[in-house]
Amino acid sequence: MNNSARDQILSDIRQALNRTTSLDKSVSATLETRLAAHSIHVQPVVEADLVSRFITKAKAVASTVATVPSLAQVPEAVTQYLTTSSQKLEVVMAPDPLLDGIDWPASMKIERRQARRQDVVSITGVFAAIAETGTLVLLSGAHSPTTLNFLPDVHIVIVRRQQIVTHIEDVWRRMRSELEDMPRTVNLITGPSRTADIEQTIQLGAHGPRSLQVIVVEH
Image (cartoon, rainbow, N blue to C red; front, side):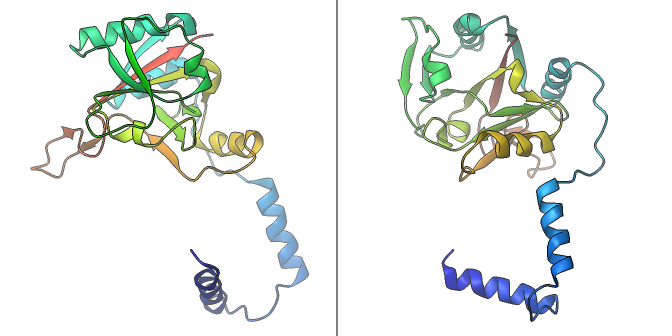
């Protein structure tokens, strides 16, 4: 959006609010306080262990989930999943330092790049995972190309225990706390892609992966 378009939009908003002059200092102070406080509305209670709750909710939206004790067991879990689902040991992987630090087997063909239309399996990490809904949060960037989230038929996601938060509001709080700049894109993924547009029948893979495999790392 260019500056002239932005100015026009803000001008239209001011006119709709009947604000043709600067805000009163008290009103401005109130708005600044609200922005700084990031007040949160009523949230559902999440009583269970966050990992258990996340796994339950992820499975409820047709994700498949495996748990491993540490990052060292991730390759075995990936290999088992691909073998069981009759997939080749060929993946395109995010150029993520976390994934680079894993000792992947020589038998697995790995390419670290953006996804292409012909790719079948992708592996990525996450910024966070939401226990309330079983949702994965992925940010666009040099280490996490967005194409990996949508083009391949199979998406394998590595989630560490400490990345699981209770509610979606916790994600924004963590982003403001940990990131210098906001990402261009924030993808919230809750289960594999689906649609019921055709005769009200659920079809997987409508706008993205047909399969979503989540590997939760306990430590």
